Amino acid sequence: MKKLSVVNISKDPFWKLPKHMSQALIERYSNKLDIDFIDETSGMRESLKDSHFVVGMPFSKSALKKNQVLERVHFWTAQVPLSWQNTANIPVSNSIGVNSDSVSEHGLFLCLKALRGEVSNKEFRKDGFAIAQSPKNLSCGIVGFGNIGELLLKSVSPLFGKKNILSRSKKSNNNIDNFFLSEQLGEFSKLNDYIFLTMPLTEKTRHSLDRESFFSHLKNNVTIINLSRAEVFKEDDLIEFFKDNVSARYLTDVTTPEPYPENGVLREMDNVFITPHIAGRRDDIWDLLFERTIQEMDKWISNE
Image 1 (cartoon, helix red, strand yellow):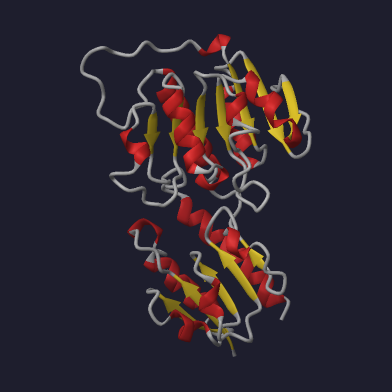
Image 2 (cartoon, one colour):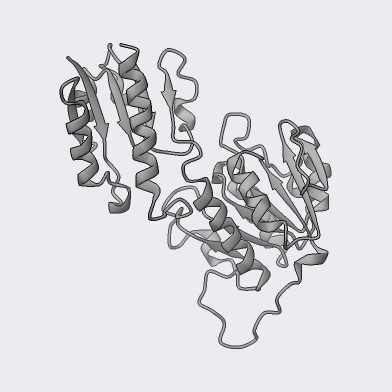
C-alpha cells in the first residue's frame, strides 16, 4: 500500500487541519493508502522518506532528501513556494484560487483605509484627523490580472475614475481604461494614484519592481497596496522610496520575514500599514482547501 503524508506543521492554530477533516481523510482513503500525519518539523525527513504522496503546508525540499519514491505533492497555499517551482521530476500542485475572494476583499479593506487617510501602524488618531480622498478623480492600477486581480477590479471599479491593468497578456474587460503588458511597467507606474500588487511570486517577478524600472516612475504621493509577496521588491528600495516620499503610502499584507519584527524599519514609518498575512483567513477557507485536496487526491488514486 502506498503512503500519504499530511504535513500539518503550521504553528498558527488557524492553519492546522481541523480534526474532523483529518478524520474524513482517514475514512475516505485508509483502505487505499497508509496515512501519516506529520505535526512537527522535527523528524520530518525520516517520516517522509517512504511517502508516495504529500499534502499540506509548505516545507523545505531538503526534508525529502532520503525519499526515492515520491510521486506527487499538493500544497494548501495559493502559490507554489518559489523553491518548489523548478521541480521538474515531481508534479507539484497548489490551491490557487481558493482564497481569491477573501484576498480581494482584504485589498478593498486596505484601499478604503488608505482613502480615509488612516494608514499609520500606530493607533487611530485622536486629533488632527486625516482628510479622506475622493477617488472619482484618481486612477488605480492592478499589477497581475489573475483571479485576485479580476475580483479586485470588480470591487474598486465603482470607486476610481480610471482603471489600468499591467499583466503578461491582454484580456478584454469593459471596466479597464488601459491595458499594459509587463514590459511597459514604467509607463504604467507613472499613471496611477493607487497601485494594487496581485501577481504571483516567481523567479521572473522576484525583485522585478526595482528602483530603476518601478520606483523611479511613481508619483510622489502614490499609494501601493501589496497582496502579492514582499519579495517582489528589495526592501531597501521600498524603504528608501517611502522615506523620501512621505506623502506616499504603503499598505501590505505580506512582509519579509513573516512575522515582521516588532522593531522592523517598516513598523516605525508613519506612511506604512502592515497586516500580518491575514488576507486569506476567512471562515470558509478550510472547506475550500479540503475540497481542493480531495479533488487532487482522487485524481492521483484514479491514475494508479
